[in-house]
Image 1 (tube, rainbow, N blue to C red):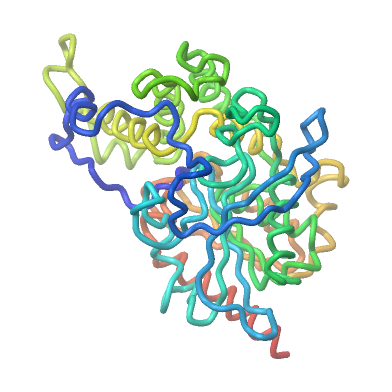
Image 2: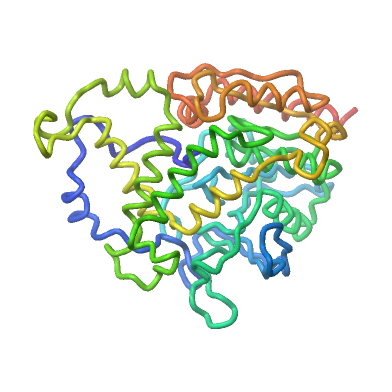
Length: 407
């Protein structure tokens, strides 16, 4: 899932060419990662100490998490909601773009005063995952041995590792149990992992457009994205942080994003929106560009200006290895002991995480009342573009949590 919510800056016939865009915005940086010393924006930081990592032969590393909060933790410390970001998201769930934040809040429509997750009632927390590129320890951070960026030496991480890190953040904040852990796509996967790893610390989960275990089809789409980055000569094996702007792995990262964005949208949505229309020139001749090509180019460059290629690869690995049943006797066994409330949401046009994935997840959660199916022509990103059905579903799960606490 993209982490970009509302689409801006692109319309058929309105987008400048790639060359014009580069001239206006300047060359793309080798990495758009936030680094220590940059303006913190709304981020707070916590050193969670040594974090064991499942996939790291060295055992683990010391981790700092960047996080943000909204609302107030009550005296009982029972009104905390954790919002887990998706693939290219970060801790900036709510707010504007500005100093320290390259983009505005990715779930402004769902979280905030008077919103379904009402920050006048709930204390909301979100952290950038370990391995991320917007404040938490990741490949662009300095290696403790020499101060140069970790780059190629940064270990792979799993969603289980990320959840362990998030549990340390909960400890730091004095939160024994979350009222709700909710997230879309990769964030939903972490909500599921929370239910299996810390069932006593989660009163409800919300998994939106997600899955209990990544499938071969999903891994196949990811394989082409990873190859695009690794085969970019400017990737330099992952050690590109000293490259000047314009000479980083933005071509490979952009191709990866274009492939991914195609899976985030449905075929009917792309066909209806673009058809066979041209954006530039005559598509029968060299230099002609279809409108849908221009659209993908726009999203490719947009991501390259706010993300990091090494982090992209670490997130691919984390999702590819996601299987909540790994080492637990399978998905059903892993979730059988979770007795909290559960919201499982699917989008009917989602071709990346189709309905069958949500149905398997819902069936494995003892207190889930089945899949909440949202209609959208958009595809996987439908819950970020059209919020009314999701709004009602989220209000519903929080009402259940509140009622259970009063019982």
